[in-house]
Amino acid sequence: MIILLRVVFAGGMLLALAYLSSYLLTGRVAHRRFAWRLFVGTLLLGLVFFAGVFIERLVSG
Image (cartoon, rainbow, N blue to C red; front, top):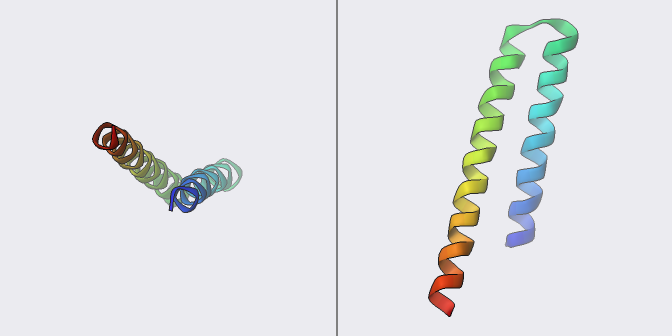
């Protein structure tokens, strides 16, 4: 499960980077907006993941 979440996190960041570079090449504002949403969503997913790992370590001792 942890490996899957890491892959999803890395994939989200790479996809956000791809859309950002697409925005820089084409100038389409929709790509910038989607890149920003992907970036923020991936960061929130990462925070939830690390909070869960932290709580799991506290509970298990």
